[in-house]
Amino acid sequence: MTPRLPLLALGLAAVVAGCGSTASGSTSSGSTSSSGGSGAYGAPAATATATASASTSSTGRGTTLHLTADPGGALRFNTTHLTAKAGKVTLILKNPSSSGMPHGIAVQGHGSSAVVGAGKTTTLTTTLKKGSYTFLCPVPGHAAAGMKGTLTVR
Image (cartoon, rainbow, N blue to C red):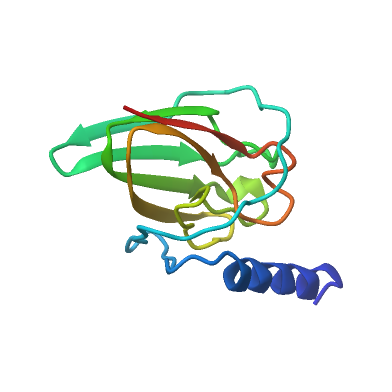
């Protein structure tokens, strides 16, 4: 095992223990559901430039938004702006194999998904009122490096 692996495991354990969320994570075979949670996830950082737009679908059951972590390993999502209808919002994050590192998805103050390794997918479902929210990667240092964006709920 390389010297960095134990530190990565320790960091992931700290995220799970310290996020204050009642959510439990999952990979592509299920979903994470959260209606609460607390905490800030890192200091503000410069906004990353969107490289592609996220896909969105709205039904009577809520809004589903699809995000992708940068496949080249940069600490950013494929977009920095998302829009959803008020109510149930599901965020699905695909972490490409080529990213080479773990990622997750969180809505500041409204829970976070499981942090998953490269090549995996994770889901966060939460209920949001109209307003502006920050979505981000809960892995320590990722949001501070720019892996975050704005979710506008209308």
